[in-house]
Image (cartoon, rainbow, N blue to C red):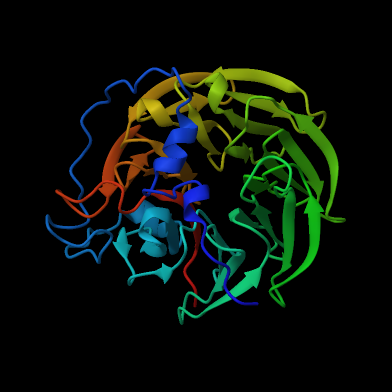
Length: 376
């Protein structure tokens, strides 16, 4: 199918990099962001180096991180129109990355052999061979915002967000068969699907959309429960046990904790000004919430549901991802154009990935981060 005409000005992060997402994140009358603690100087590139270029002085990885296994981070730089691969242990960049049209979502198969990219400015998901860099588009529908791979690697779900939340908008989650890389089914999940996550056992998938959360039975690819939420849910995360779903509700300034068995609210976590993204550690003991307008990440003790610490990061954090070994949390800062790396043990920012000093802040806009095994 011929390439669709880009409509960047009608999407998040279009018309001036991150301005679209920034406008949606801060409603009229909202208070201005509170100042955050000074952020570390970028460590992965020297001043004056191109943004997101190769690391001239790689730092040796810690033994504990290497012992967890070799893996990569894939960072969707919507403002820079590419997705880059990063050696997660040494934090070195691997080439110039894959060209995209303001891609926001990225996911990796369990064996690391394929990377799927939601090519948000177009009508497709890109399938990437990380060894060769070859790409192939899979037509899914207008402006896909997110993509997720099931734990067993047998299904890929793409949130087809569409260009509008009203009449004529999209309510589709496209199901891609990773064997053929073709769309085999379309699920009507709710208006303007945003983020997709699978439970650890792969039996359920959860999709945030304009009106709430859709719960999908992955064996039949059907919606088995619709949970209404008038607070515009954005980022979602399911804990390793599969019993709790964490839902970021930016207008309400909180993250709601849902019982996955009943769909009922089990708790509310106050999460500052415009919480946008959330992720949970592999052991399920902590949740990390990106508080966009606070330029900070909240650390939640999941047993008590209380915020135990707040960590200053870059400007307008909108994505958060815990490493597979649970040792670090990577946070994508849209207005800073950087990724803050938080050490879970110490609760401090230990590295900042960007292009050095003096670079334009909207050049990168990292809005999606995924981890996967290094391909062999």
